[in-house]
Image 1 (cartoon, rainbow, N blue to C red):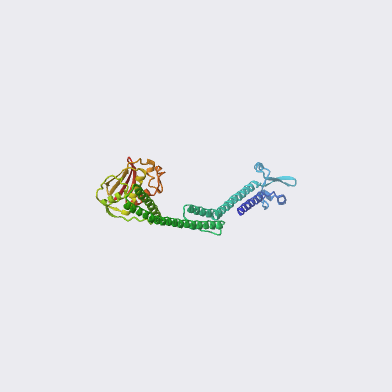
Image 2: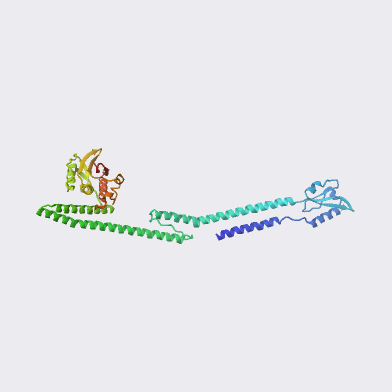
Amino acid sequence: MKWFLFLCALILLGGIWLSFGATNSAQELDMLEVNRIVRSLEDTWPEAESDRLPSSDLRIAFLVPRESLHTHIQNRDTLVPILIDGQGVGTLVIYNETSAEIEAMQNRLSMIFYGQVLLLMLAAGAFALYQQKTILRPFRKLEGFASRVASGDLDSPLAMDRQNRFGAFSESFDLMREQLALARENERLANIRKKELVASLSHDIKTPAASIKIIAELHGAKYGETDEMKSIIGKIDQIDLLISNMFSATLEELEQLKVSVTEISTTTLEDDIRAADFEQKIRPFHLPECVLTVDRLRFRQVMDNIIGNSYKYADTEIEVSGGFDGTFFVLSIRDFGSGVSDDELNLLCEKFYRAKNAKDKSGTGLGLYLSTYFLSEMGGSLTIENQNGLCVILRFPI
């Protein structure tokens, strides 16, 4: 910036100096030359009458007495009478060149002015190019780099030019990118380890829970089933379902949750539905016979989640029905509870979401989320509707 200002000042001062020279270039009338011409005319008289005038740098003419001087007076020419033996024989005219000199001076000043403007424009252009190269272009690179980092791109390095003033600054930005990338990678690894720990703990907890259930069943077989024993077994089944959901959700986040479909008859699915109904609340039902592509293990988990939710939130009888819709088999499981608000229907399958009526109920909000995931992996879908109770609709490809 200081060199640009210095150059502009130098151009302006040069223009001022040249302008003073142009305005002072007008010459005054050379009286010595005038006197020389007059003496020459007097010495060579009468040659002047035949226009044989002395040579001179001044533009001159000789007028005899009968010629008019009016035009020359208007032009402000210099008039010198020529006397021979005391008598006037004519007039020496020295033309006034002031107008031509003024015009020439104006032309010189115009050239100086336009030259100054041109030099200032060139200086401004050079300064703009310098600023573009050393400031604006590196700044735009930094701006684009910041946008990429903000959008999560931490793999693209920032090209650095140590010759410009942003060199060290851009290097600091790139170091920041590297540290952010390292921190993100460490966070990813920490999350994976955390999920692996949850999966491991979930798996380890299932073993003692299964042992408790076996002991309870053996106790019931030996001493007879009581309501207390049935309650213990039901609670253990709930604990087992919660642990299974947590384990499955963790595996799904680790991208290790597998769904393997096989062809299964609907009569087999009837047995799995009845096995999930340990409180015997499902009304008698019969599914139309066909062959579906289903992962039976995941289907059992889906039914455990749906029927377990019905026990927990509705505590009514459950109606199961089946039918066909094009190339899909549709399975409906409906209870006769109060259902949920229409605003919550689309949220029930979200991860960790629990409806307003679940405040005093145990659960993690993973059951319907995992069920939706399983149905999607099987090529089907899960939807929920209010139909004088809550109705869960499962669609399986035939």
